[in-house]
Image (cartoon, rainbow, N blue to C red):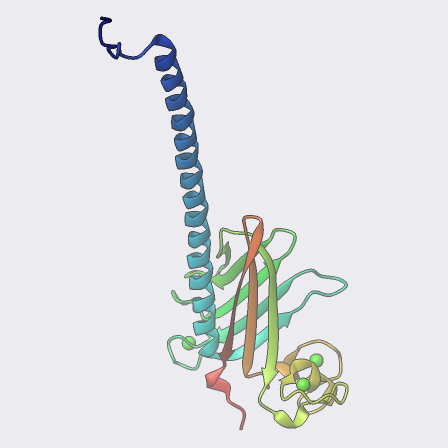
Length: 222
Ligand SMILES: [Ca+2]
Ligand SMILES: [Ca+2]
Ligand SMILES: [Ca+2]
């Protein structure tokens, strides 16, 4: 009679194989955990950027809606890469352009493609112009559209009626709403009552786009 076969436990080879498997599985799990955390880091910085851009756009929209005057607009041209808009918002409602108030009323938003920065220029309490970036991220483009509710000038540029009167059409119409110089200056800006803004910011390998349209309620055309 032979003795019943007992399970003699694990052989050395079995133990080594098991340890090897644990090592492989552990490495895979660790790699997965690390990649998950780097994905969530990316998501976090992306949502910071989204929040920051959204806040900046909401602020700009609010200021523009209350604006009493669009003072100057600069578009990219043969001689300049700058896109900028300067406007006056009478925050304290006294009808005066307060330049050296604690809450400055003349604001310039400016985008320079060379630096990829969107900046805000306003006077400080002593009246000195202060420029600071308002977004930490790179701005790929800032697109400004200036429109007027003077519908009768729609199509002035090339006869195309699209239901929207642009500053270009006011300019092409000549006096009293334009001055035929191909630039957005006083005669046209006086009749602009809607500003559409489109901002594109770099986000990792891609971009995010933010846009709004602001009715300049304080300057409806009569
Ligand atoms: Ca004021
Ligand atoms: Ca048009
Ligand atoms: Ca003009």
